[in-house]
Length: 141
Image (tube, rainbow, N blue to C red; front, side, top):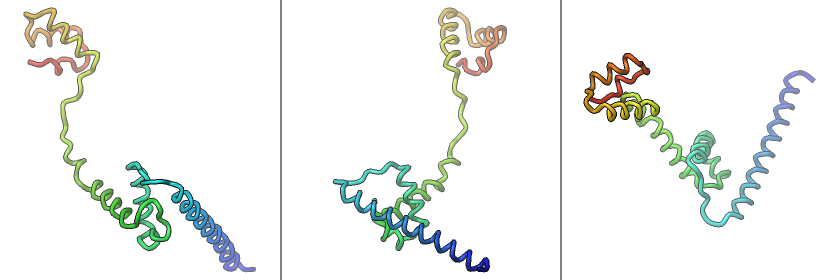
């Protein structure tokens, strides 16, 4: 037997196993779907997964396989997924001031209360003598 016949035999065997596995899963899904009463609630992650796979399958294949929702629903989910990905939200994020260390904020507040006659410059000068990283930038004028 030459290699082309062997390759055709093995790929045919693998294809047959995949077809049988898919047929089993489709039958199992139909049976389980029949046992569910009411609407099937899916999380956003589950919708994304089904939408991505459904898009790759195509509408005709989805009509034969899909039990969780109609093919049009999967396609709508996929459109929303793509729209959300390219809506430009990442580019609209503006840089902001870094967060204040939660351990340092009460220290600065306590220092300002204990020394009410000190101004901004004196408090900043105190932290320069006893430095803690980034503290002068968190003291409000």
